[in-house]
Image (cartoon, rainbow, N blue to C red; front, side, top):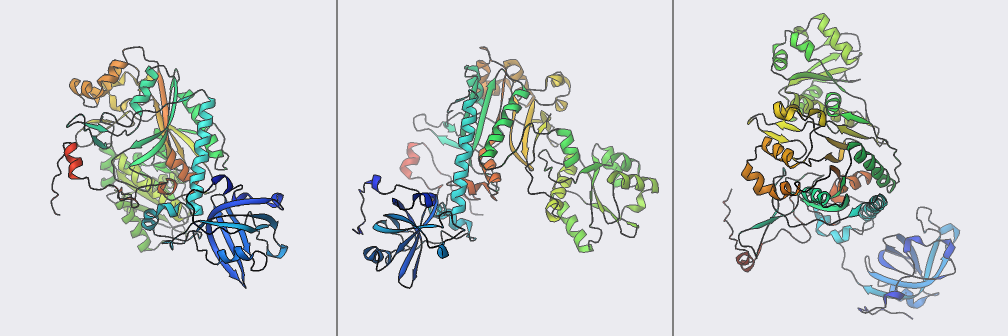
Length: 602
């Protein structure tokens, strides 16, 4: 019997007994029902072959005008992306027609019933082919993009990773607790998304940049071990790894120290990587912040290749090269990298590298070329004595064919420029071992950083981070030298997450807020509820937050976290599918006591 009518009240228990991509020779001779989307239709000499796709994969259906005549009539009307259900005996394909590239390539179905559940217009792009498609077009029709194997597999991987995370946390006696989405606006570094209140006129909620305050209050409340797959919101400029709304694995624990949190997180990461078929082992290596910056120019170093920075400030300070010597005397530094085997670079190549360094923030770039014939060439060679030149070569471990690049400036600029040049050469010269999965911890971050213009202090992590106990006294005298009790976990040059042991004393918390420039009134207005909570018996506690979107994107080898989020925003924070954000009606604005400001034309 052939059912060709489109039915809205179909008995779903009869539509599907098996997943398309999981059928195998073990089920041959069995009656099966499968349902999904028509991927391709091929008419070969009267026999019609249909590839039917569901999220598990593809199964081949066959309609023969002689063997199953009525089915053949329906198959003649099928088009790509029609939704159908079929039933029939699963049979083994003739050996010369099997497809070894397909998981179900040795079996097929000659249906005896078929039902068209839904027709489809011609899609704006081909679903079943791995081809480059404009991202804006894909995001506009994201529900179609989700059917493509690449994006679908990303969603499946995200599910597996999240499942492993939950199983691991549950097995370690953590409780999953949801924290509020509508909260009070607090200064946490980025802009808040504000939500106007209808019932509290002229007042606003904020969407949480993180559950930071609430997870600490859960510790005050005696939960002791909390986690959450938490939605977070930040109104900031977007990049490939940023979204206005994102997801993090949020963790907080009481009665712990830094080692407890690091150990737990390493076990969690091992389990998350297993979901992607990647085996890593703990414990992970550790670098202190100063070591990471000094060797790699970054607090999230990519250690898959060995090109490192080295310091020549002591040499250049005594040299006759005044431009470099002056930077050292002002508290900056002169550092360099030695890149092997590029001494044959042309003048244009060197100009391009210098322009790249300037785009990274350098005022200029110097270099020393060690030619294959043993000669040395450099614009700054005339400022160096033979002894100074020899020391630089030795410190660089430079050989004929190498070039040493030098940058002099404030430490922050020097690290940033050389760190990014290091990554540039790592990619350009194929120095990075892409098969490696290098995980490490960066510890002993500075607690504060000072603004060069205002001289004001800002928290490097966030204002709830505890000072390293060894440096606590520095808060009174030299707070900018105080180390934080904080840690970041790094994977192949990407920050997977970060955390800290928290402040659990109301007096110490007020002290830190004060160092960050908040008055007593501002502390009470913005954080009074938290300060008060700390007066009622607060356990020592700490935690970490891992970026779930970034973790999945890295393990999926995706270029952007948009590839692992079901319905992401584009680079302008727009949802091209729903056209959000959109205008609100005059009635809605009146209910919220809002009035729009006319935008000035640029």
